[in-house]
Length: 237
Image (cartoon, rainbow, N blue to C red):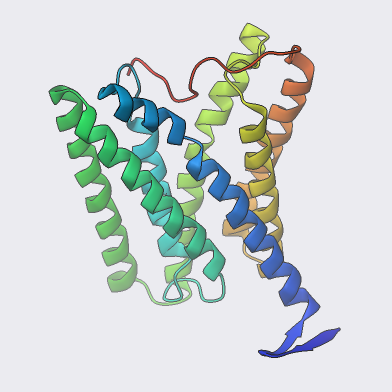
């Protein structure tokens, strides 16, 4: 089936594919803005207190690698992967810079070192993929790196799932963040399936399963009027 539009001829397949990718971008945006209350508190108190900046370092590296995977020079035709990770990288960089500004000297130096390390690692990935690989091997190389990066990011949901089971409380697992994570993974799983790209649908399929587990646990352990009282990313690290 084909539908004529002002921009030309679009297939239903392409419309559904783009719809899934756009939905994934919107759900991801919810996750990107979720730390804003935490950083508003940091700015207000002019201190990073006991918060850890490491999750934002990991998130920035993940966004940069996936951003590079979504560029036309690596993977033509998946621009919505590029857009979502571009926005994500901007948010993570902003969070890291705020953290560095208000952190004590030891944390500040550590975060600066890690930030330069992220940029160096990203520059190495870009250089190696361009200089040593030609399409389609370039896509395969960066694709495997993006899958490894995405799967490593699932360590956080696994930690939260374990915490919920151990404490029998959803105090540390806000419902709307769990729902947004599930919907984002589901959307990009569908997008990857439409694009027939296992480097997209495999990690997001895993993310979708973890999202379902979180929602089931929320239903199992939530209590009336229970609200999260601590930020998810608070840490003594």
